[in-house]
Image (cartoon, rainbow, N blue to C red; front, side):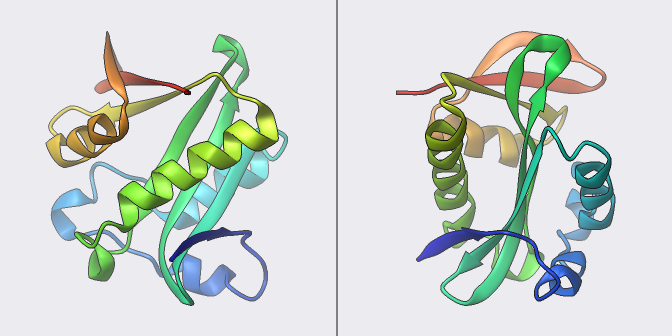
Length: 146
């Protein structure tokens, strides 16, 4: 069972050790960088550790982008040792549900790096759709909440 948990002093060090595969490193920020951003933008950042039962398998962070007045899937990774097990899809859906409940969102945006077809297919599989905007080497996708 997939769960999202707060990042605390008890799991902080383990979250910092999460890594993606070598060929994915250009597509996603490290958790060190992501948590630094979460600290700086703490009013608008919502980071979580992803667990499969009691095993840490990934990291997800949502945010509120004030300039565009929109909620975003800001950071997302599944650790290299836990990929291709369905955890990513489950965590995305769980995270969006949580954002709907806590922030009453109607839609969610994200960006996917050009060339990251795996992430693009994953996002599209849960209902994200390309908006047509390409900016800073990223394709924008939007999820409309049901």
